[in-house]
Length: 350
Image 1: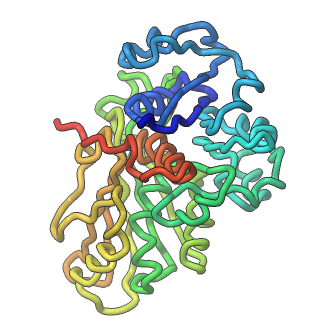
Image 2: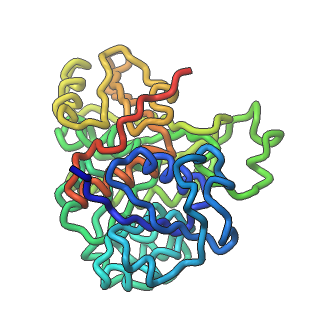
């Protein structure tokens, strides 16, 4: 029996998240990519820009955005800079198209906060009631009903998954949560930047955004939505000299005397039915290579020296669970498919 095909459009497909979407969808049994847009590369065959896709999209070329073509899709992904998706989304959802935005246009519900951090006036605040934040492990029921999915940022994915179960259980304080995130350079996008040159970032390691980062209000809002209480969060991202991967170390203070094993049990219970979250055995230390190329998040918990602090280490591939893989996971939910469809790639070793 032929599988039902999902007609898919991708707006802005020339960046790392765009090619990652294509890589994942190439092995998705229900995916039919009918359009991929790029004004700068219009007319160029996808396989000519991304040779790793030869044999998969040989008849597909980049094209100028076409309202008629996109309106005929079932799902449209936006792999574009901030501000693009919100201009096109109202007409798409009016045509019955579901939208999954991999940028930040719909991630923050509070419009003044969004404007403060992104420097733009939101063009369609009225459709925010139809938006779900696309972190399935925390907001699956909202995703099922949504017309627009705000795909989370990569740092928020790793940090929210690592900290939320312990906060919800009341085992750690909502005050003074510290998140220390480290990302590979692919998180900065595919555009040419001097700071991303090999000679600039190799053999170096730096913090950035310490005075304030756009993912901070996103995480604060979603922590409060998931737990019902405001979280005092300090977040500092770092750039590490590797291509892909992300590790977040989250530091919290215990509110009661519970053992490391009890903390472990809370995390295991929270994610026991989640196909893409692996709570590793006590004493484990997750590494980014354990998730490279996969949609997995692997986490481990520690109570250092038996003190009153908790450390959670969370690793993801920033381009997969942190972007394109999670977007496909959301598509599967919207289309009532098994959540793991097309996402069962095993992590690459070495």
